[in-house]
Image (tube, rainbow, N blue to C red):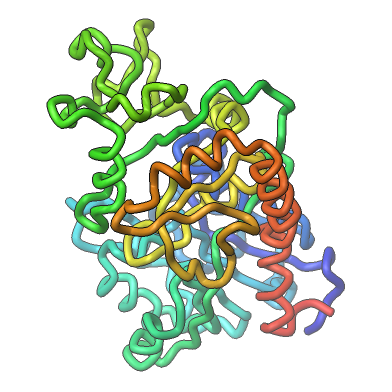
Length: 356
């Protein structure tokens, strides 16, 4: 049945991520789904959740007849990512394979327990699986499962990530993990910025200043106001607060940064931070790559060579040439409006034929 855009009855399997602050994309996707009609959310930390429920029990709790459900979505947070637990299917009793209802699955963290996730996909006979990775990666998964895959990048909630009009007090920022198991680029940049004797330092802020009495930043970069904070138990300020801010503090850091360093994540994933930087008008400073055509050097970002041969010059231009920086961040800000979760879902639902 084809419905109007905001007239769907959608059953969503998801953990309750309303209070999760380490990654907004789970909740931002759920919020966008609500714009398409009536939504019943079921999963861990939702009030109707019961570990013993079957899919029949879930449908009964929704208050809908089975024929009234237009779509079932298994969201990014449903599967179990804990490496200590072999299976990824958190509730095997909830089997979707016999339902004659369009079913879509948002595959998340393709670099973890992928074989188990593919088993789950095949078992539940989804009509469509969404992945942030391209066809060259997922075509083999289609052969293994017999299920249609489609690339759909992360998106952005432009109501959450937006310019706050704050003073850009940091010239250059980075927060997060170095991800050395997937890429050497973040470590190379750190070695460029930090003194060799201080490369073990996880931050130039907070408690790390007690460990490194002298300035850990190389002389060529000491002229910049730098915010660098890797994930580490000691990456905290003098009051015990994490130097890797989350929630509104994270959005504020983006708003207070002129230039922000970022790279692709594991498996070449175009991560959420790229979109978050675009939407908050912090200039994306990244190594040369194709970025799926989303980023273009000199238009909505500034790229440097992967051998860092032009890193210093490019960074200086990005920080001190305000006219160029403002033009680039304005282009990126305009582009961010084309990458909302609502837009992603509209494309997916149109493909499935569930909306006009």
